[in-house]
Length: 187
Image (cartoon, rainbow, N blue to C red):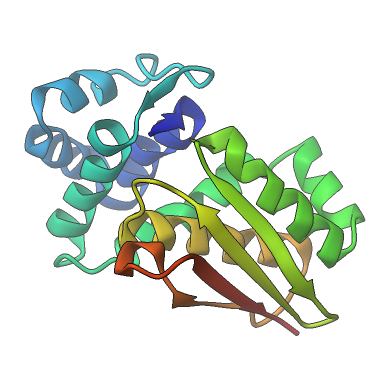
């Protein structure tokens, strides 16, 4: 399974902004040599290239959670939120705010395949204050990846203008379920 460089590029930026240069160096030192070489220089990650998910995305996210969050997946959730801020700025931010929540969620679910291959996410239902997303294909599912996605969706809805956004993962491919279910609610 592969992940787009866009999803990788934000990780060292997040770590340095939250934990400083020392934190970034500590994180880099904890990575395997291949991942460390990839992240060593901000220009090394090519945003339009595809990288192996486990080595370049999952393991570095796990290292972040281990070093700075006492192995709590909340670290992955926070990276997801940061990534939404990073991705949905400028003209994209205006687009996000101009669309209906339902339209935006449907488009966001379709974006999944532009970040992860192979993958599939679909909007199962949507009302004025709730939506259900199903991730039905993700061969290398892991709870940290689901957390990053959940954090991204939560922050994207906040950027859209939704208040009191909650994202609950009620079923999980990583736990052996047939799909990962994200229940989104907002005011």
